[in-house]
Length: 207
Image (cartoon, rainbow, N blue to C red; front, side):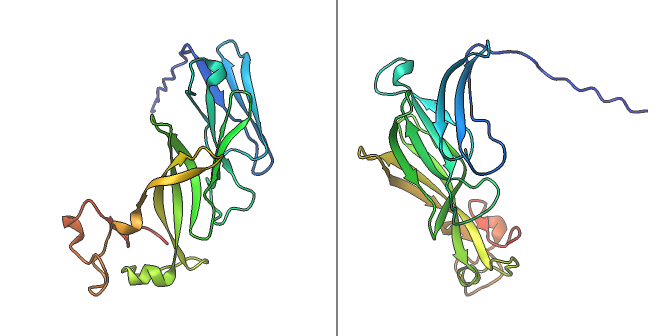
């Protein structure tokens, strides 16, 4: 007889809870800010469902009325369809006014999952980076076995509000620039993989 003990903390922390409940994919959503008495302090209505969790960040002045909402959402027609797909992020005022919006869903990139607001007011986005089978083989990929005949790499973008209702990329990082492989001697980044822990083995994982 084996007895398993399960411990679960039910502590309630002082403060507020910010969340965007959503059922299924598609349609709009509502972000709520709730206190410990289950009172909704503020709500934001969205025409598109959430890609991940929302964030509150400080505005230019102190006080709730100057707080800004960062809302990553799922675009209507994502260019790369998979679990966790998003495509865009909005910044809304306390009263729901659109401050700025940035869409990252095109032939090359598709934002997915979460974002990360930074202390400087910028936002980090993670995105799939689409690569063709030819590009994969040219980098030393041994086999590509999926219906799309593609590889999806990863990229990270830091975007900065431009003051005109949008944002611009001010920094970016691409996994495709940090690969290693020991399959194709004539391809880039051919090396002993164990000697390069800072690089990603292009033949590690399914594609």
